[in-house]
Image (cartoon, rainbow, N blue to C red; front, side):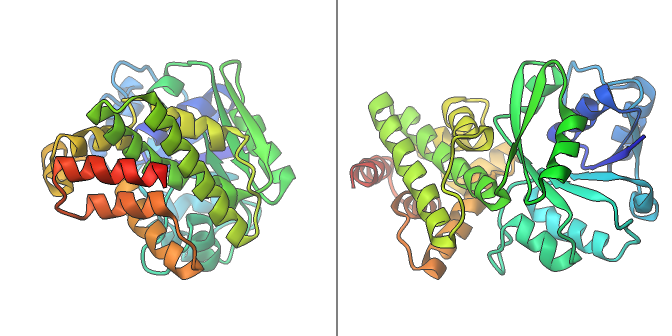
Length: 327
């Protein structure tokens, strides 16, 4: 019987841990919040992050995982991208079982070296026994057992198939894809695209403009992939599926950011008022640097980054978006 650990007790981490508990008896979730740990263990809920959701009775929450890390066969990393490097370093300095498989469920780019998270994981831990999980997955819908698909990407199909088996239920289907880096790029750029779509919606510019922006974003995903000599295929859940979800729904945090930008609010004002982390903001900054590093032009991604870090007026932002999708 395999033993699972989910690092991160936010909405997505909790949803994944609950999902794993449907098929597996030994599932643990690690949290740095004592009240969350107590609530999961005594009430089988995590109201702070997944309100009105009853969690599986067998799911167990713990505080420290490092001293127990050798116990686990599968470790899912589900923390904000800014925290991932610290987790990778902790794993590096721990006594990990050689047979332990890791699943990276976070999306982002390491800001200093401009490495994608899978690259950072390999570089820091010297471990290539991992998969990347991504897809059109709102945590609350997975927790409420809404029919959902996702992608598990790994260079090792056998590893991916074990993860798929652990995750798949009668409401959640996981499928294999061979290129983790492709999946990561889709997951990062779609957050930038979602900001642009939110801006378009905020101005009431219509679905023609939104469709044009989506095509522009897809072209830029494929341009990055081509430059890196990896798969350009986006016909998987983590590709087109996640792009559609994030760019079309107001439940998307990055889409919401775009709406607020269209109202004339600065990024700093939005963060201060909402107290939210917007992955798309950091992704836009990093992707713009990657474009320069790879010597390619990513008009949309670079323009969204410029808008987020400028003092453009509402009129100027609308003009900038219009020009870039027609370029």
